[in-house]
Image (cartoon, rainbow, N blue to C red; front, top):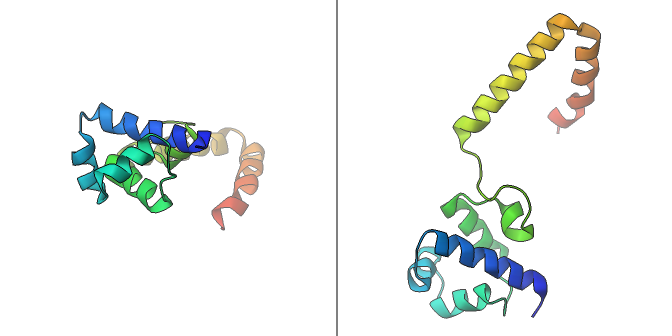
Length: 116
């Protein structure tokens, strides 16, 4: 048994237990058998990426957290992201008004990312 499999399994179990869902109920939601879920949770077998994507989508869980145990467990809601984007845009506007040269340096440094 690899440690990474066990850690992913522990995080899957954590998600299930937080929601107070039995293995049988959870496995039905995910479209797998209870036996398979038990093997994933105990780290005996590695869950396929398709299953991890399904858990992420159905339970609003970050793949980074699910796979690596890093970062926030839950994905941000679209409204929160929209608010953050609005705040960033507002801050950039203030920066442009106060220090146009620095604003242009910031803009030029992020443009390559935006074009991808």
